[in-house]
Length: 603
Image (cartoon, rainbow, N blue to C red; front, side):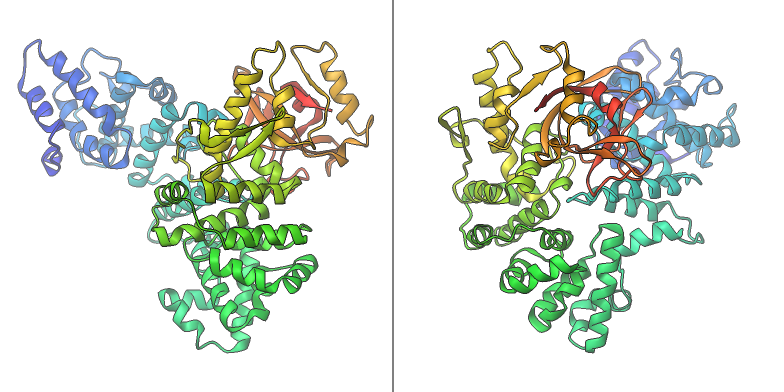
């Protein structure tokens, strides 16, 4: 059929040729060697493209003989995912098997006993059963099992890009809606979903309205951004005042609806800073509080735009709009911001930012500025990615909410000295004296997290080492030392308190206590379970609010450091991120369900 010879791979090609020509017992060893080589290829779209070109020939030369994949008519789509997530040679064989069936379904490989129609039905069912795995989730379960889940995700993406599935775009749109409503600081996942959604469209298919809104928000949300396109920056110089006003309003409306920012929006802000600063408030969509802060600190905000907002850091526009709505612009806060803007960046910090964002040394400062704008504007939008740093990521959110000046002080120390220092039980712990771990950038992170998480995680590990032998949960001592004096002094955990749930109800349920709301947010520990009620492990969150939802139910609203808080926390227990009174970035559960997962809290 010729597919094999359309692609030449130095490692795999001779193995496949040898396998096709060898009729001896050595063939089994060659098969194992092919699977070993194919295992690495199966982890990427380009690698799958290589395997796709080989799969029909391997099938013709009895690659699956004597295995569970020998008879295609007996294969069951519901078993595909579990087999892929099992890993090893079994998963790799499953990949190649699905690729040969895809070739049959596309008419590239006429099979004597398995028709193209049967193949299409099979592929349709595989896609339908695994749409939720089409794009790698950013949940705690996915973080813990990222390698196993990645195989399913990349295979599904490869298949759907070649075999359009009618429901795929609807699923992608729902996934975009679910993520965007949480208002994350980093929106790479959402933008990737939009790009993938466009690829899933048929040439003659009209864009669904909901999907179009998100696509336009990122690409061209205004009249002139559509008309001018790449010439937008130059075109702004020739727009009348009324047109500039309309552009500012259209950008802010799109950003408010979706939480997404177009690179042209950043371009407009830069233009307004130089030409018409009076329109900055309109371009940011500010309310009364935001306009007041802008008026009182116009020079500072213009400096932030100049230093931190450009086409690469465009999402900081949304962060700036939310930052201006906060009542935190004290003299001390303003000085802390100015200190960062005027500071020299430490060499190690500069290298870390250049590596994370693939930017030049000259661009480092803009990423660092955008980093603190994002976290201070969206404290509940910071995520840990695929890093085991829920404690440290929680700290960034906590400080940004409770003590933004302290956050800026730590940030300034990190970017200028390559060090973070925290006082713990009368002794200063310096991160520069500790081993810093490297971050996993599988899920992109904001610049403030890139800078601070290695330092904070090292300090947290040192605190854990100093307190882990005391016979109680170490967080009894760590949390006040790590997060600060506003952590409530009482502490209990389910393993050392028989009345644990009653105590939680006493201090946190609105029917018994109205005082707790004044002290929130507060750190707490939960155990997350999968859909079969199997425990996945402990996780650090912040309790934000406890109150009645719009339906009259008492709910616990919390911050989850995972990038996607819409998760399954146990059998029949789905975490909500919208529709139940959640504020931007909050997740929630009914009080009783949350209490079931809780294992430690402060009071």
